[in-house]
Length: 113
Image (cartoon, rainbow, N blue to C red):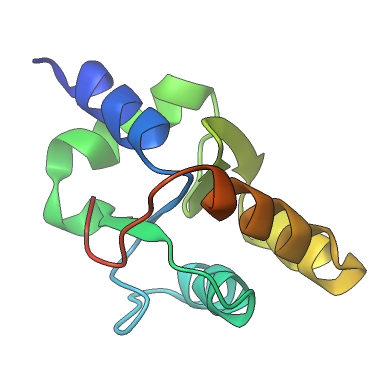
C-alpha cells in the first residue's frame, strides 16, 4: 500500500483525526498543541497521527489534501483545516457539534491511527 492510500485509509477510517507534530499528550509545536486542545475540549475521542514519527506521511500529507501545513484536522473524511480554522470553529461552537455528530456515527480511537 502506498503512502497516499495509507493516509486515505486513516482519514476515512476515523470519524475525527488530527495529523500533528507530536501527540495530543506531548505536542511538538504550538499550532499542533492548540488544535489538539480544541479537539480535546470537545469531550469526544479522536484519532491522531504523529507526522514526525512517519516521514512518508510528513512528506506526502500536504499533497493529499493540497494543504501545506500541520496540523491537519479531518472530520468525516473531509479536511476541516489547520490550527486557526479549528480554533475559530471551536470559539463559534461549530467544532463541538461537528465532532459530536461524527463520533456518534462511527468509531474513533484515542491512540495513533
